[in-house]
Amino acid sequence: MANAPVTVTITGAAGNIGYSLLFRIAEGTVFGPDTPVNLRLLEIPPAMNAAKGVAMELADSAFDTLYDVDIFDDANKAFEGANLALLVGAMPRKKGMERADLMEANGGIFGPQGKAINDNAADDVKIVVVGNPANTNALIAANAAPDIPNERFTAMMRLDHTRAISQLAAKVGARNEDIRKMVVWGNHSADQYPDVSYATVGGKPAASLVDESWLSDEFRPRVAKRGAEIIEVRGASSAASAASGAIAQSRDWVQGTPEGDFTTIGLYSDGSHYGVPEGIVFGFPGVAKNGAWEVVDGLKVSAATRAGIDANVKALLEEREIITSLGLL
Ligand code: NDP
Image (tube, rainbow, N blue to C red; front, side):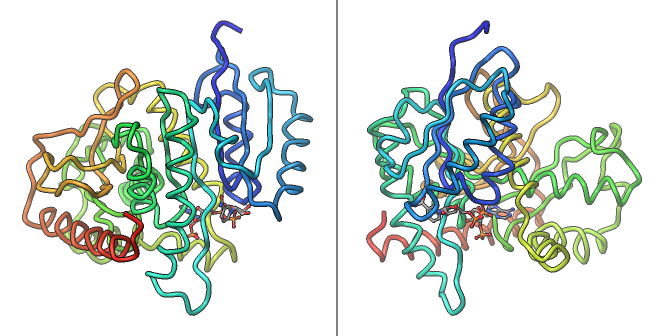
């Protein structure tokens, strides 16, 4: 193989998202056909056998690009040498659980994992947080990793982004590939603000093809609540599409975003973009170049977009207050 192997660590590897994610990474979707991959799977002890079964299936697939698969229940070992870390495993919300309970449970997972990444991963490690609440889990992990630049801890906003593209394409009768410059501002939650203000469809402004009532009554709520719609129809939460989002976000980070387009990236805010304060992980329009994300600046912000951004800032600051009061930050 032309390139040196890369190491990818996946947490919650035996879960539903992991099951879709692993095979596509093993097949070369993120790093390309000339880069072999070593997979390191992290699971909790009760799921070790399930992870072993997945590793057996990976072996049976005999992918040219898959060199090694190792399984761990110890985060320090699992993140050793990781170039890409996909943090998927998280505590699901159980009946009667308040938001603060969920954050406390997940803080207990993402804080130690951030530290384990800090202490053991490769210098160039890239982190994609999928487990919910993804933005705030990414913040907790980043805070526990003082030696790693904060902007390397990204939250997965890519599925929200592709959901928005798909809804717009269906509405105007276009193909996904015709749509450019979509953005979903803010939090991977029902607060998110899917925004077609800059989007084009075959080069035409999307806003000229749809009316405001469709945007406010159908598009935005549907994109934001798509996860619940999938659960209702499928009887289980989205897993393959979440894996697709994590793959697309990772692939663009490694290989670069296409020229002339941008995507949505959940990025640690340094306080210099669109009035979003420092110290929250926020969905921004972004491009990846030479292995790093950059926020696309200079977009004209309408009053509606401003209100959408501000509502998400408020929601994420509230989440930050909760984790601060719990001593997780
Ligand atoms: P999934 O693989 O279906 O989901 C994992 C996480 O991804 C959840 O937090 C889920 O959030 C989140 N997620 C983000 N975006 C989406 C989306 N669009 N659709 C659906 N989920 C999304 O969960 P499973 O329960 O199947 O698997 C989790 C695995 O993690 C298990 O194997 C378990 O053993 C492991 N685990 C590991 C822990 C650790 O590493 N310490 C701790 C807890 C579990 P949401 O819950 O909001 O749907």
